[in-house]
Amino acid sequence: MKPYDASPEQVSRFRRERDAFRLRYQCPDCAHARVRPSPPGLADATWFCTLGYPNETLMAAQGFLEGSGQFVFCKYFELV
Ligand code: SF4
Image (cartoon, rainbow, N blue to C red; front, side):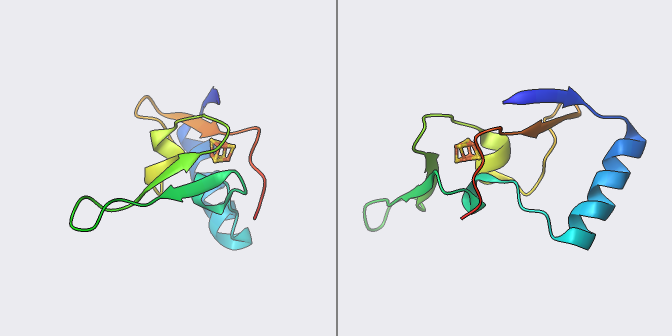
């Protein structure tokens, strides 16, 4: 993962372009992501990366920013 400090203007522009072009960049849309099933009656299934890159931002959230305000994208992303 390569964090990138984003300005408020860059965040706004990214959101507009993400929506306009339906950009996909998160783990659930990646060929390397898999769902780990959970035993019946326990917690929901969870996503994991077969390349071993745990990333809460991309795995679980709809966001693309870390809490510190940095863009986070994975250079190994491969569209399913
Ligand atoms: S390769 Fe990157 S984008 Fe793909 S599942 Fe792993 S962490 Fe997510």
